[in-house]
Each structure stands twice: as structure tokens, then as C-alpha cells.
Length: 246
Image (tube, rainbow, N blue to C red; front, top):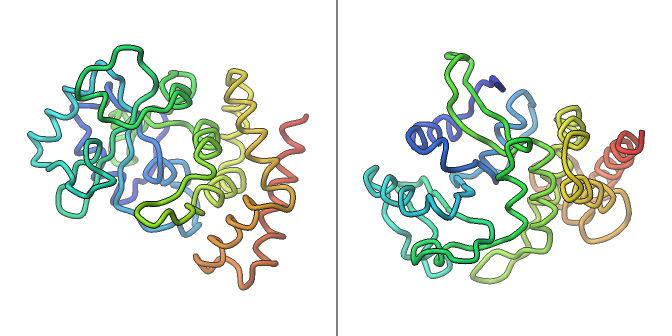
């Protein structure tokens, strides 16, 4: 069991997911907060809770969110897979299934999400105030790197702005949670290992991933210039790449 001091968002997510813990896996920004719970790094602010849900559990999860007074988002690019309550947003995604039901068909499908459904790629998370009580199932740091790599190139509706956070998140994971990423990498299967290697390698050379990660770092005021940010990120990626080779 991984024991953390949760952020406000992670604690709120755990309260929402109390009866759903065995049906969903926390991924995305909230999972990054779990992975970096002991880090002082500033993260991109968010109120989004992204969940990988098994196809057979979709109806039950939606019913539970409705009971908790979440409403389906009416925003065009979120309709069908996003539920909101106040400023908290829960988004459901799923891996491939050959015969999804009507509700599941509405969710975004990505075969690469299956990596998060494997128990070996998950952390059971408890909070420091009650370390004996499991609160969340979360993609582990190595799995998060793989998922972030799979998301490279995505854009944000409605204007298709590139999502630069994903690139910087990979840097944060290898720089701040490198031991956990390495442990998950060593224990992971071939597709996870390949994705981790590719993600790290993409930040260790000139190119769009490095530029986007550096831009996010500057925006978070972790570096004064793009050139400084690129040097920091590239150095961390090169060093971690060497660890993967040993």
C-alpha cells in the first residue's frame, strides 16, 4: 500500500470514489498528484479527475455519479463521458472492448489504456491519517509515463491547442519519482517498458516534445527561459535513460 499526504483534489476524488474503488483506476492529473505527493514541484492547476473504467462497470459508475449529484456535462466536446458537480469534473475513459453497451460506447476508447488495468501497473493508495484504509486504485508512476507518452500529440478542444502538460509531466515523473518509475519499468511488461523508453528518449533530444515540456516549465515559473528549461529537462531525461539501460 502506498501511503501519501493527499492534495485537496485527491482527497475529494477518494470521497467520490469510495464505493467505486474496485471499478475504476485513477489516471491523469490527479494520479500525477498521487505520484508526486512528496515532491515540492508546482503542478498545473486542475479540478479534473480522469478514470479508466472497465466496460462492464460503466453503467454502475454512471449511476453512482448520478446518486452523488453529478450532472452530465453539456459542453460539446465533453458530452457523453464527463460528469460535473460544482467545479469538480469526472471524466470516464475505457480501453477496447469488442461489444460495449450503449453507455460504454459513448466513452472515449483507447486500446493503450489497457496498461492501466493490469494490477502490476497499479498502486493501492492510502492516506497518512488512516494508513490502514485503502482509498484509491491509481496508475503507478511507470504506467503514468506510458500513458502520458500515448497522449503525446493530443490537442485541447475547441481550438485544438496542443496539450503541453503531458510532456512536462513525463519530466516531473522521472525527475521527482524516478525510483518508482524505474521499479515499475523493471516489473512491467514489454509494451509499458517500450513506452517508458520512448517517452524518456523523446525528451533527451531536440524536438517538439522537449520544446513543449520546456514551455510548460517556463509557464509554471520553474525556469526563467526556454533554453534553461530545455537544459534541465534534457539533462534529467538523459540521466534517467542511463538508468533504464543498466
